[in-house]
Image (cartoon, rainbow, N blue to C red):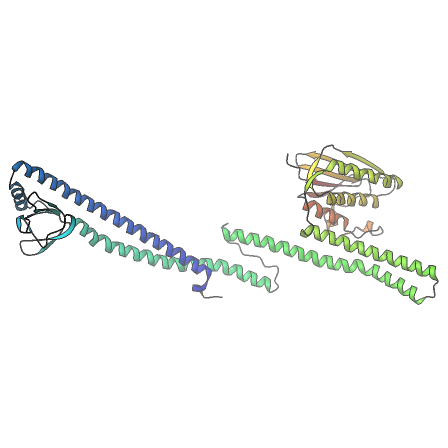
Length: 449
């Protein structure tokens, strides 16, 4: 089994955890900058408001009024506000000392405290009427406190999230690895020949359970096909043994004897008949296999089923009357389906052939067509010996023949082909008792209006 870090489950879990961690980092950074910008905006608004108030007061005092107001406010130590008035040469006229003349507008600068310490300030500088500089600023202590508190907390939170992400990666990859490992082990067992194995289910109904159920259905279908293949192989060998032995015997007799030309011709004719019978057998097997496997392109088109049934009944009426049987019909008009005309015709022909072959003379055979709520019902019935209820499912298997039919021609493939054609059209086939006899009912989907 591959190492965990190289597994798809681990990469998927690691990618998810990394994406989650990066998203949290981006959101945290965005929130931090949003708060910081809001605090900075409030601080600058205070500076703007204070500067406006100073200029209004100074305009009322006349010359020298600005220096007086700045000096007064500097003495009052108005909270975290900072003031300075410089002349054109950069000399201090009022307020606190600054380390350098700031450019006009907003800037981060340093004021000098009384003890010579420097005080970081967010300040706005503007020119005065005498080409001096008015500086009004505020201490960005709130922003600095935000940086001092939030950044360490954010770093701790991010570290915890990253640690949780790493732990979650291993836990999630372990859980995915266990589920996938169980499926892989089952698949390995099936590859090894244990076809009875099935994918495990946890009972949660999650995606893995649904996948396992789908795989199990596929395995059941494959097992059924393999069983069918084994049965067909055995049945073919069984059904071909007798005709091949007879063919070989007749050819040996014809070859060993001193028969004249007519006798040889008769032997050859019998051999040809035996060969044609085997070819018919293989043709029937091929037709069933192609219909079931989709090898035949079932081209669906609008099909007038009433017209098709009428034509088939008309064509079989002479054969039924010649054999002393009655062919009764009850065909509803204007019944249409989406289907393949050749395959549906083959289905009806097989049912009628079975009815004619397995019923005694004088028997009534019925062919009916009706459209109901459940779909279109195609029925072929007879008054013959019937089929025991226990054998009504078995007769649809390939080469299945009842004991009463062993003496009649055929290979037991007619009803198999009927069932295959019905399934190819999305329909079903069912055999019921006709008291006496048997009723074969084919239910096909109705054509959408």
